[in-house]
Amino acid sequence: MLLRILAAVLRPVLLSPPLARAGYLYATLVGVVWGAVLSTGRIRRIEGLFVFTGVPTWAFSRGGSCIGGVYLTDENAGARVLEHEQLHRQQWKKYGLTFPLVYFLAGTDPLKNRFEVEAGLEAGGYR
Image 1 (cartoon, helix red, strand yellow):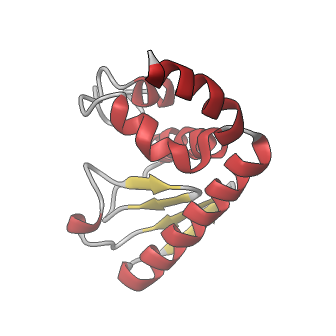
Image 2: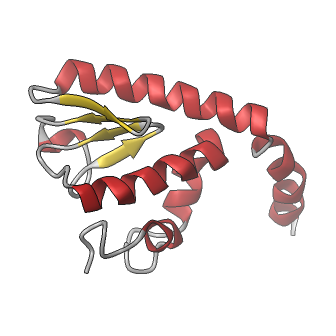
């Protein structure tokens, strides 16, 4: 009960556009630094999404990871995957720094994780 009340009070604050935007920009900065340090491949910017390839596989999960407006991967950067990652970028913009928490709470099974389903399971390589 207390958790629901706390969530109801905090949700409008944490998801307010200025705070979510600041969280998104901070996450993007962290992603750019992480990618710049680790990437040995091509770095591109596609429709606002920074794409770092040649990143060691220990530095991200599954086929790649989106951090703010940055996609980190070894070589998984085809057009369909980038469409999927663009949708994760939009999720980061909406949720800001709460996105890692709500993503985690949605579960580790991508077929049941609402954020992966929303971004497109097939485009993300899950089907």
